[in-house]
Amino acid sequence: MPCTTTDPELWHSRSSRDRALAVALCRECPLRQECAQYALDRPELRGVWGATTAADRRGFATGRPHRLDEQRRLRPACGLVSAYYTHFAYREQPCGECAAAWADHLLAERRARLESEHARGGSALGYGLHRRIGEPACADCLAAVRARNAASRQRRARRGLQRPRTASPASGSTAVLPGAQAGARGFAAAS
Image (cartoon, rainbow, N blue to C red):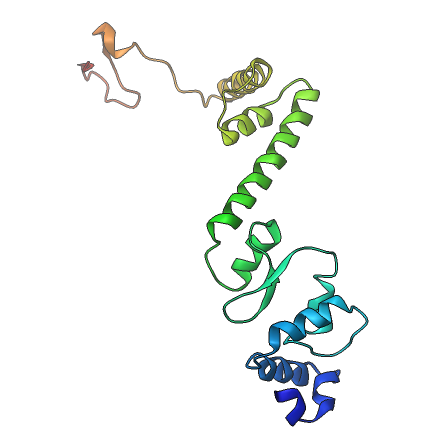
């Protein structure tokens, strides 16, 4: 056990370099898990215990479930949104359990936002939320997005940016393309 063979001051130092060294030494200890659990159960302890600093342990003092991973690092238990972020902090792909927790969290956030948009009578943002959730848009949100699109077309037409509508290809008519040379004949639209 490294804590019994090295300077005890190392385990209670205020220097970040000393703490990092103590954590590195502690990671190899066979009693690391028991030591970390002992420190988690006693929030008044200071210093490095079980390769965790007091700051690490404060993050878990909220009662959230936690675990030691394969590299013996203290981290939130899988299946939580905080564990989803921890995977990225350790440069890992999130596990299926954490990805599912994140998807549930995201869906709940979107549904809450959609609820507030519905309370305002529907909106184009609500339409986008319906689509992200994967459900058909309600009539109010659909009407709001149609009104927004119509207003956008009117603004573009006033500025001369609206493309002219040509005859449909199914009618078999000929159309002259904008910018064609004077006297050029149009061609029959393919159907």
